[in-house]
Image 1 (cartoon, rainbow, N blue to C red):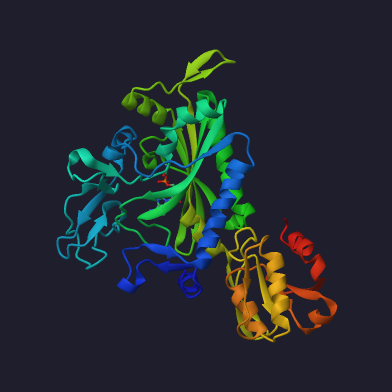
Image 2: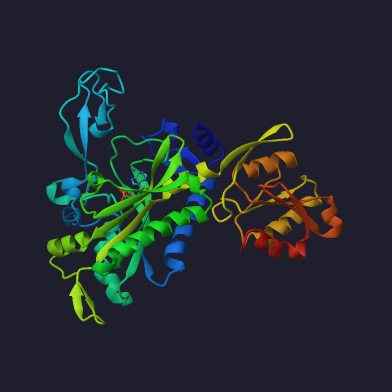
Length: 431
Ligand code: GAP
């Protein structure tokens, strides 16, 4: 974990937020390479959930919503963690995370905790110039509710028949008591959620389907099966809305932890919003000539957590000719840079050719042109940020109009004519 965090800082993937002010409470900024990686993760999700499917459409709802939404959803009353203070050192903890010995994790004092009180995780703000109870609003703690309140809008405008889904990617906020483990648990994070509306009798089947589908998505993008598992929730773990939940878990350096939750939400959400809004949110099934409240199956993933899992799974170190090589074995679809263009030196005859090759490739791939340092060092710099392919321009290029393609994992090299370069790169990248 430490090595991955160091790599992220050193190579501009992820920085501590507000760092020149000493950082700010487990918030993180994605740098030039990190923003590309995370964007690729989100794009891969969107492609599999929306682009490649006939039965799912997209949405981008507002972060600020009517406060009644959060009363209807149950978040105002039940989205809480039990909080205790140590009477000895005043440090605060989640009661359910205390060690069995009930010794304070900060000062070691034994059983000196206050009674637990319920702490609501939603961030409050005020909308408009007056700060009173009537102007309270919340930063959304999940993107899901933006989907439920738009069920009718989307269903009537798209004329989708059940089953169909609505997918959304966006920021969510939770005032977590114990954020930590880098971007694993933060107070501001991005979610990738999809609500799949089904006839009541089909919900269990779709729940099973989405569990397998989502597990497979992580494997297809390069996480090995032994680092992933599906863990059904015990009845006492279930959220207030859930009839059944399974987590896709990843084997983090500190042990198994949640990557994504898949929940069978029943008709809880639409029933609640119908009750609180006074709107009819039932669906009329013309073929079956019946009206009902759709049930919902929800695969809810975190973009930051997925990015971290892909980074951890891809990180590798190996010895190559007596030297340590760090390599991120990222799937080419996720790698921040797809192709690096490397002139052998800054020689005045090589640079213009490298510029031409870069111009040829730039519209098609995210490229990086690196001219600094020995070619061996530049390969290593690309390896450690996961660039799958490097293209090297050398003095022979001036005569034969050919370049060398060097592959990240095998380090194998192949000479290719510039006129065939695009086709060969596409082939290598599986496009
Ligand atoms: N709509 C259901 C829902 O929000 P959740 O299990 O609370 O379910 C879904 O969240 C996913 O969002 C999690 O599996 C995780 O990937 C991500 N997530 C939740 N809280 C997070 C936090 N504090 N920091 C980073 N990611 C978080």
